[in-house]
Amino acid sequence: KNNEFDFLEDISFITDMMLSQAMQNILSISLDEKLDVPTIDLEKLDILFREFLTYINAPESWHKIYDNIKVSGNITFKTQENEIESSMCYRDENNVLKILIINDNTIKTLCTLVHEFMHYITMLDDKNIVSFSLAEFPSIFFEKMASNFLKEKGYDKELVDKMVEFRNLNNIAIYIAI
Image 1 (tube, rainbow, N blue to C red):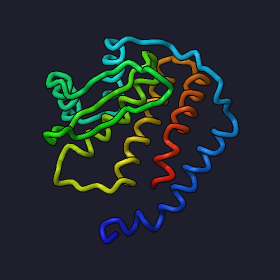
Image 2 (cartoon, rainbow, N blue to C red):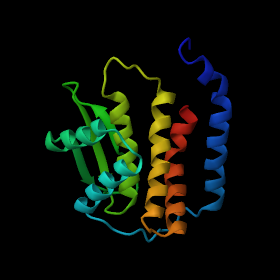
Image 3 (cartoon, rainbow, N blue to C red):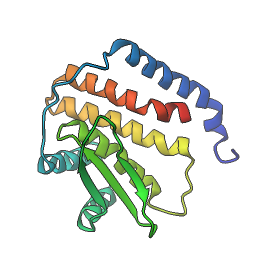
Image 4 (tube, rainbow, N blue to C red):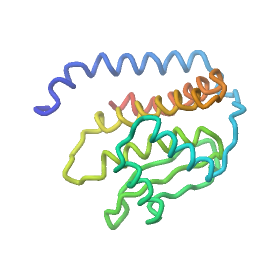
């Protein structure tokens, strides 16, 4: 609380705005609706992610971190088996930071990868103890940037917006916890 005083002053406004957006999405979207999201393979995902890092002017260190987690095997892509999105950034039993991405072979996986990679960046330094609320904001922010990136890459704006609405529904548990 001492370190986050300004943040705590504004947290109710920020979370009210996030929950309001999520509730609007719940009311405006049919959960039975299936989106015809363009498919991509892991090679195309890798290319899009690298382009995204350039798009946001990410520091060179982020490019190197991404390369390192790929080479070291600390990122795993698992085929989505059901409707549950369970991607995560976590520390294994040896305290090694890893990323698990549930891959549905669509451009939605890019947004998931961006979200979890931002968690990786914030969790990379053990000395940086970041509160849950602050750790989620960069991930959600850059996930939104990924949707803008996809639109600028020529993906259908309406489709990307619908995809973001579904991702917002996925993030509602995060918003409530914050």
